[in-house]
Amino acid sequence: MRDLGRAHVEAFLEMMSAERGAAQNTLLSYERDLDDLHGFLSGKSVRLTEAASADLTAYLSSLASQGFKPSSQARRLAAMRQFYKFLYAEGIRTDDPTGILDAPKKGRALPKTMGVAEVTKLLTQAEQEASDTAPGQLQRQRMLALLELLYATGMRVSELVSLPARVLDQEGRFLIIRGKGNKERLVPLSQSAVAALKVYGRSMAVENANSKQPVESPWLFPAASKEGYLPRQVFARDLKNLSIRAGLTPSMISPHVMRHAFASHLLANGADLRVVQELLGHSDISTTQIYTHVLEERLQQLVQTHHPLAKQAKKHE
Image 1 (spheres, rainbow, N blue to C red):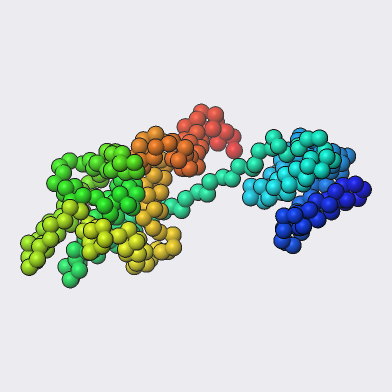
Image 2: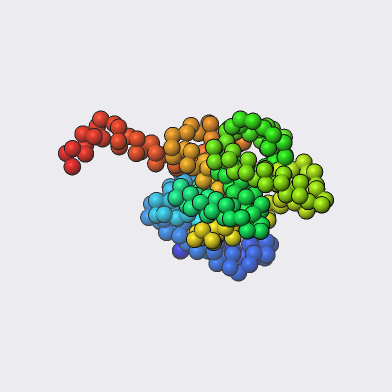
């Protein structure tokens, strides 16, 4: 970097060091970023100190086209903002060209999820273990009921473990869930979830009847915890142990991942995004839109399979 541009960058770095106490690594990072910007602007015959907002936008666009991550683009923008604010404060410029620049949007990370085959494998393992009549069967039946409910409804784990015991008295195939903000929503239950609940409920009643000190609990999954119901951390731990026995990777499986699997599998099989929003208990559709990648894949398949022009194109391949 030559001429006044270099002198102004050095003055900027001195200010960041002396007045802001910037670390050496930060100063080196700013210097590299401004060098890179200078190289881009030189190619357009624009001086670093005279760049307009449009020039800086073009630079950020070039970073995106080169495959720079939004986080890397944001770091470059931060260096530019500091530099041009310095030029404005020093009277070298009469404006700050970064004032109207938008920060690069960071895409939301796609949630971990499980395929249908993995969920089936997990449920099959839980079902086999629940049928074992060895001591501890009630706990194994509890795990099966928890999993069936989770995959059938997509409940948050906090909603699941704190279900009231009166759920066992409900007839029919629907469940009322009290979620965030004390809002209630109605979700359907699968036949397998209803069956697992009934088996678990009967076993719990038998064990309580045979106990010398029967305990009446208001919770569906009672436990000796502060809240009186199964801690979600205990369920998460037991779920990982079950996944190991099922031959799955435990780090990829959690109650939250099962919730994502519920939503993804529904959308992949034709469910409407608004319906999934309602079932998940999302107050805002934008929260549910993280699953649109699933919708996009399904829509592409639909177009390729059913659109007449797509069929025509296949014939000519």
